[in-house]
Image 1: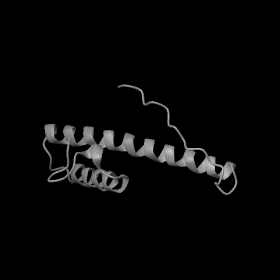
Image 2: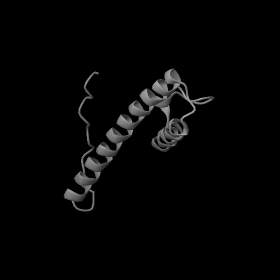
Image 3: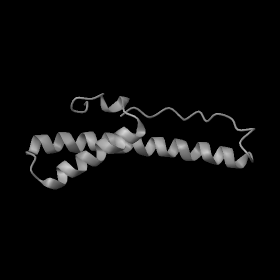
Image 4: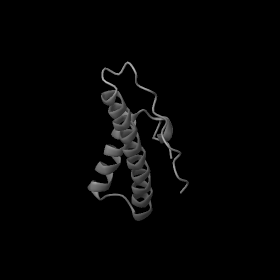
Length: 86
């Protein structure tokens, strides 16, 4: 599902996806969405949350690799595992 007037959610930057998730949470907390709209927003929010958590995990692993190698000069690129199909 894309953002209103913007790029599809899967093409957003990390920061853009986080902003989109925050906007979804705000809409859900307002309690003014109908059931179908709320379910769709919740579904998009869960997908964004999973994507963001995965990106944070990847960044954390990259940092761990850099720290383990000292100054990062001998770091190897992190190749994240394939994501399981849902």
